[in-house]
Every structure is written in C-alpha cells, then in structure tokens.
Image (cartoon, rainbow, N blue to C red):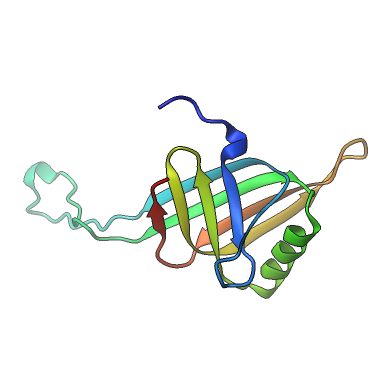
Length: 137
C-alpha cells in the first residue's frame, strides 16, 4: 500500500437519517481514535501477581476529531443544529484505501476561533453512541 493523501480522508454526516451522506466541507485535519476499556480480573491467586484481563470484556468506543474553516452553509448549519439539540446521527469517516467507519455519533464539542488577521475556524469532536460498522473499500 502506498501513502494516502489526507484530503481523501472525509467526514460525512447522514443529513436526514436516511443514509443521505453530506461531506463536512472545510475540514483541514481529521482523526479517528478507537478505544477498548478492559476488565481487570486479577486476584490474590493470579500467577506471579501479574494482572489478568477478562477476554472480550470492557467497553469499546470511538472518537472523531476535526478542524477546519467554514465552506459549506448546509453542513455548517446541520452541525450547529445537531450540537445544540444533542441529536445522535449516523456519520461516516472514509479512510482512503482502507475502508469506511460508519455508525451513530454525538457531537461532544464544537469550538469556534479566530484571530483578527485570519479566517474563522472550527473544531468538532464526536463520540460514538452505538455499534460501529467497518466496510472495506
């Protein structure tokens, strides 16, 4: 596999709940993090007092972060509306030559910033809110 272009990593929002995905325009950076909490089952009889973990236990989660500039009025308005209503919606993160991660996320943070001599930027953070699917491209 060769190197991938960052511009091809896309964040998409299911704008109406009917799998009509809209690309969140203007994002300059995007990241996806998977997490898996574990369940410690260590006890006084654990071999050598080494920690033991419960296989398949714990909670899985994912977070998506992005930062960019405003470019698309439609996606900007939908993001603001979803944040203020606390609505959970399906999102996709397309990882070029790897696959698509899709599932329900809630916007957990939305930040706007600017300096006097530059453009207004925004940062968005999403937290998984259910089971995620991975589709190979």
